[in-house]
Length: 153
Image (tube, rainbow, N blue to C red; front, side, top):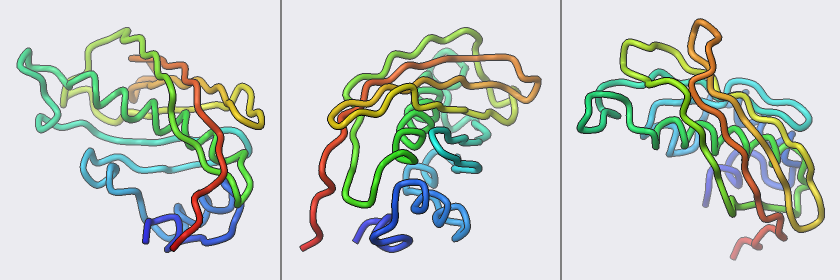
């Protein structure tokens, strides 16, 4: 059973994400990379995380994949918040622009995602990743496939 089925079977996307926040849970990727869904509303979602040296690349900075994971999560959950209980999504494309380097000293990061358009088969979203000083460190745009939710066996 996946975390969505455990927390909120049969709820809309927004209701599911709100239930996840209330339960204090986070998807396994959040445990791995130490970030959490902290706020969600109709068409938007915010994740927060604090990167550590465990996410460093060989150049001594946080790997770009850390920022990409936060941005992808924010875009995906912004779209998820617009879906009904019978729908699911997956990312088809993610374009990330890195504006500033991130280190463990950067501190807390917030990824704020917004659904731009959610259709029957495709959705589009964008997100910004900001440091504690509200400086944008990266941005993303995403294309997502909207599909029927697979039925549990």
